Image 1 (cartoon, helix red, strand yellow):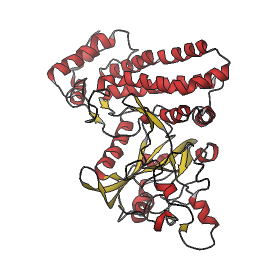
Image 2 (cartoon, rainbow, N blue to C red):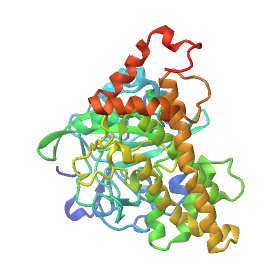
Image 3 (cartoon, rainbow, N blue to C red):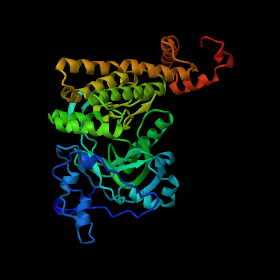
Image 4 (cartoon, rainbow, N blue to C red):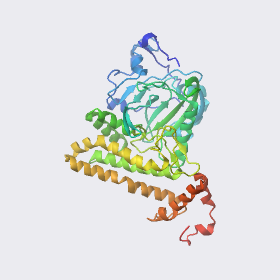
Length: 455
């Protein structure tokens, strides 16, 4: 696991420029690193330093320890540099994912070797200055402080069809947030994440998207020696609940406000008054809908820490996830979740708990922006959080009733009278959840007729 490095971490070797092709050319519209406070220890992007050099060397006078060694950072992000990977091989490209950012899958395959180098991070896309997000989080309900993955690097933001997308590589090398890890990803987990995101999108569940999957011959040590991979993934934003929690935990309310203003400006631009309470309300609504759809398709996230919760209500960070086989509401897919905190049937409750953690850093902003008393702020936050249950229930009922062929407006008793008894039967019999739902398509036509008032 050797890094491309000069002795004593005094300088850093950067990646050469990728050959310009249709699959390596993007127009960058970066705002995150331009508008939000970053790592004070390294203010200038390494590739910006390179551009000022008169030589053709790829080595710059930037201490590699600032880019790859774990350390505490006060800002919301740090510059990052990907690694050179041995024998990168393009394995898959999502055609619909590529289209989202104005690329085509065919362009990847027509230039497969070039694409493999660029989308593994072995070469650099023109104009890209990579960075890593800095955030904290509650892990299994306990504040864990700084809690970044350490192996995800953003290539930049690009706008296509008026939608902003932040492009990331996962497994391309260590960042300043790597902690005790190595910054790499293995093929096994990378395949799972790549496929899961696209599958969830096909199921109409809000999710980050996959772009490409590249295998490498890098040896990565986990429980055993495995070979490496890099996933390129995209989302309108990778800001999480934990992105707000970390500066707030340091009483850095100015940075918390800058982040909130940024998210509203670029992702909720229709918010015009009481912005911070509306930001919380949007997070509540979008999270409720997302988790309701998880429950409808039998998805178990496995690690619902606050650092894995998107401020946009997207499914992100596919780790020890699973889909239900035999229907078991108490199913736990994460072998390290000894208490069952993130069990399938606990996901709505945990989502609300996480939203409560998000409300804490927003509370000070709400209080100051509205000149409200502390009790008034508590009341408006409580009202926002109390909306989670009704919104979750409404979305769950809507989707589940469609599964049962009840296409009219959901009635208050549909879930209790139809859906829950069916699920109880599945749990008692240990029936496969997805298969059971598919068999509903085979219900005799007479039973699904509009003249029949019950199933």
